Each structure stands twice: as structure tokens, then as C-alpha cells.
Amino acid sequence: MGLQARLDERKRLGLFRSMSVARNNSRVLNLASNDYLNLAMDSRLQSAGIEALRQYGCSSSASPLVTGYGPVHKELKQTLCRWHDFPNGLVWNSGYAANQAVLSLLPQKGDLVLADRLNHNSILYGVLRSGARLIRYRHADLDHLEALLADHCNERRNIFVTTESVFSMNGDWPDLRRIAKLKERYDFFWILDEAHALGWYGDRGQGLANELGVDGQVDLLVGTMGKSLGSQGAYTLFRYDCIGDYLVNFSEEFIYSTYLSPASAAIAIEAVAIIQSSVSLRRQGRKISKDIRHSLRGMGFSVAEGDSSIVSIVIGDAKKTMQAGRLLDSRGILVGSIRPPTVPKETSRLRMSLKATIASEDIERLLAAFEQVAKEFV
Ligand SMILES: Cc1ncc(COP(=O)(O)O)c(C=O)c1O
Image (cartoon, rainbow, N blue to C red; front, side):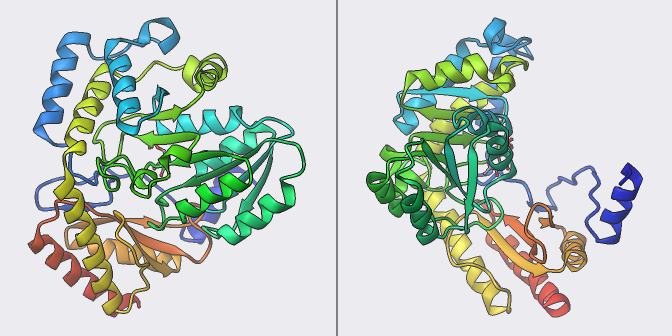
């Protein structure tokens, strides 16, 4: 099919995507961006960025293997290792690049990767590049994962298990304690993407594995800095030095790209310091999440239990989902309108990225707008 025909097909199905400049002003309640702790506009982060701009300039201006890796990047890596209690790590330009590199390079031809069916695109396409065999287990279904482990554990090949903790499009999570138990029984390498759990879970905001006491069993943790941390970029943490050496030597994403700006690194360092002590903010965000879910269920929406920062309201039909998103937009509320192929067919949804700081009058405004959506679309 030619380019135009494929675009026309997308239009016909209500799946055409286009860009528009985001409205961001004080009257708009932006629940489409992943700034869960409202740190992106925080003056302490801004000052850290400005100071780094003055000291190190506007760009790292080179790949990390040339001169792009500076003192502030090293400090960030050390800060992240201390925060999560991992001995070693690497900072990346984005979570997409980090997942692509890790999943395409660590599993090798002959290995097996067991991956949650709803894992992020960056994980899936990373594995597909690796040449390893990929089997996707049903979303968060650990009976299925265990059955696959039992079937394949005697094959004398390396097995990798990869999952998100909080799922980006559902806001739910698998039983991480059970995965840790499975790891004791079936020896596998566990890769956990905590992109959407950082800042929200953990006694110092280190994520869900920490909160559940299983972070010690994770072999490689992926974190992103463009969400709760209010910055940009990502990191991977691991326990064996050879993993870092391997990624640095073989990852094209790492070697052939200008490194993260010093300002982004400095902003992330400041964010980690703030997040560690933001205990009451975490508590508040999780309460808001529970309350909003409860209210939405009362209106007839099907919304999962839980208290994560991501609340997904499945509408089903793609065109209806876009209309519902526009209705909220007309009332000054921005949410994500998510359609296939990002989510499975017939599960188009409104996706809210909550902020722990939403004021109670904004919650009222939000719920009133959803009453209207319920009347027209449920
Ligand atoms: C689970 C997950 N991992 C990785 C990424 C990619 O991170 P980044 O936006 O830093 O590229 C995302 C993006 O939203 C994500 O949801």
C-alpha cells in the first residue's frame, strides 16, 4: 500500500494522528502529561538547570564516549545508584533508547525472552531486534508466565523476563512479589521498567519494587527522568560491571548520539533529592487516585482498582474516545485519548496522568466534566 493509501486507511478507521501545540496555561488542567509530582515547573529544578547551563553550557555537544560525559552526568549516575541501592548504572538520552538498547543487546540468539503482552513498544521492538525467541504472556497473568517458565526451564538457554511495574496504558501492575518468587525457582534475568512508578511508590520514591521489598531481586531496572522527575532522559541500573561495559561498547543508541544535556542531568539530581523526602505528597497522590477511581466507577465507567498515577477509562470505540477527549478539552481538561495501535483494538481509552498536587476544586471540575462524558458516551 502506498503512503497516502495507508494514511487514508487510518483516517477511515478514526486512527489518524497529527500534532497540535499543547495549550498550557493556568486555566488548563493538564492530566495528559506525566509530570506526576508537578516538578517540571518547580523553581528548585529550574534553578538547578540554570546553574548547570551557566557552568557547563547548553549542550553536552558530543557522544558520551567522546567528550559528552561530564562531571554532572557522573554525579547523576552516582545519585541514582545510591537512591536505588544498585552498584552500577548508565544514563541514557531517553527511556525509548534505553529499552531498545537493553532488550536488543542483552538477550542473544538462542535465548528466550518472556514478556508481558502489554509491555511498552520500546521493550517489544527491542526484543524483536535481538534475535532471541520472544514469547508474550497474557497481561499480568503470572500463572501463564509460570507455565511458560516450567515448559522452557530445562532448555539450557538464558531466560529473560521483562515487564513494566506500573503499566503505562492501564495503570495496573503485576504481582512483583510473585515474580521475585518465580525467580528463586526458575533462574531468569529480570528486567523491570519502573518508568511510571518512580516518585509515586517506595519509601523514598524509588518505585514499586522497592515498596514491595523485591528491588534486591531485580537484575536490571529501567527508570525514566521525563515523568515524575520533571526532567528528560533515562537510566538503567544493574549489578554486573560487564553489563555496563557491554552496553557502552555495543549500543548504537549510546555511542552514536549527542549525550543528554548537562542541564537535564542537573535537574534530575535535584528532583531525586526532592522526591526522597516527598512522603506526604506521595500519600496525597495515592489518595487522590483512589478517590477519583471510586467516583468514576460510581458514574458507570469501568476503571481498575488501585492507586497509581495512571487512571485509564476504557471507552472502546476510537472515534467516540476522540469525541470524549474533545469534550473534556472544551472544559479545560486535557487527558490522553489513546487508540490502537498503542492499545489493543476496541480498547480505546481516556488516559489520565494524575498529579499529586491537584487542588480539590480542580478534582470537582474534573468529576463534573466526566459526569457529562458519562451521559454522552457510556
Ligand atoms: C513504560 C515506559 N518505558 C519507557 C518509556 C520511554 O521513555 P522516554 O519517554 O524517556 O523515551 C515510556 C514512555 O512513556 C514508558 O511508558
